[in-house]
Image (cartoon, rainbow over all chains, first blue to last red; front, side):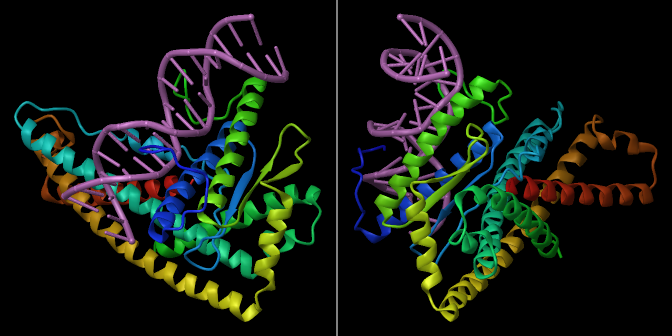
Length: 163
Length: 163
DNA sequence: CCCGCTATTTATAAGCA
DNA sequence: TTGCTTATAAATAGCGG
């Protein structure tokens, strides 16, 4: 969808396929997150990665309760002052740039930690393994439980990585 | 995403939410299908629908989902663990690395913000404005506070991006 | 390989029948 | 509500760097 209309077929070129995989996975995750937020429902996507063994992305609505990002964005660069405008704006620019990097890294970290959580889920008695033997109507309950588990896990990881 | 930029928040209006749910669910399913086709991988999404008494729906199909999971299950346990262990250590490494970068950037940010504060002070308009009458101990405390604030910011960021 | 930058293709929020 | 239509917002393929 862009410079050229993509035909819906397996991409044979390895690097191209990997690139597309990354881009689209990211987009997909975003979509799932938006859906959960906008409609107040629970949903997640499971994707097996061609890169590693298996990967799973889970996107609960864990975060919508946390409007912290917007709060962060609101953090102001102070007002202008007459004498140091140039220096100040330079600094502000630098800070903005660094902040962006920070955010990006944070997001990466988040992604990785969640993946790790999912791996643990898969190896243990996570929802996915159980899904095989379960009736569809039970999935809803499982989702909830899984989300709770992951939430807890994330807290633990966060604490840990924070040293 | 269209006639107006939508804010990412729960849609309180019932019919509007339902409409959005339908539209976006459809789009999401399409995205999942495209991803599986283009990249030759297996993936599915689980969405609990508010329409049908919160019964979960699985896409693209439950069959595919079960297939994906059972395939993983078929792998000898040892192999499963292997994959996951490898992935795990890889992730841990990545996280460590990213964390270090985060710390570094935080420090940079801190420095810059302190400078900015000082500029403000010099221009007589900033937080430090009131410092004129303070002694050095107070300044030291302020700096410490500043560091804490920045640390908190980073935490907020990290948490938020985890949403 | 990873990033960032468009040119385009898609996905959609509103309108309207 | 159920679709269609259409103006816009998003996603993203192909390209440098």
